[in-house]
Length: 158
Image (cartoon, rainbow, N blue to C red):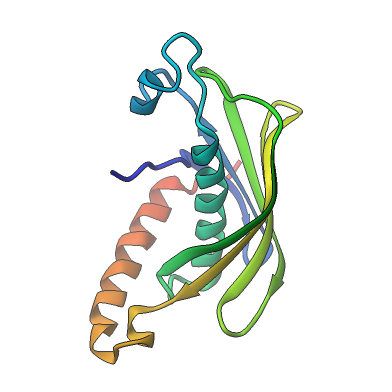
């Protein structure tokens, strides 16, 4: 099962920063179990929303040339508050370091109003399937086109 945890991208400065929105609703399937009498967004999905926003930033900055983004490491992740149905979490991610091999370090945070709910550093790697097997370049192009189309649906600048 795949969760789409970014509803809208409202700002994007290529190679630098992204601002995205996640509106939590009672319709989220996982809230039935987490927790029935006190529904809140699971911490791992809060972290996933930080990663997804970061991935969109890197994909767009690279013009979708390297469609595979993997979360390699997290550092200093702090959970400070709950995200409940009806609340809007604003997710920001800022590139702090990037290397030529496709590794990027980002500072990411999710806030509800003026309150930080989650934040920390993410280390991500970006690559293509063709990096390991040149015969898969057509699949890379297919994935890039699909991601580009999805990005166009999400990107709604303020």
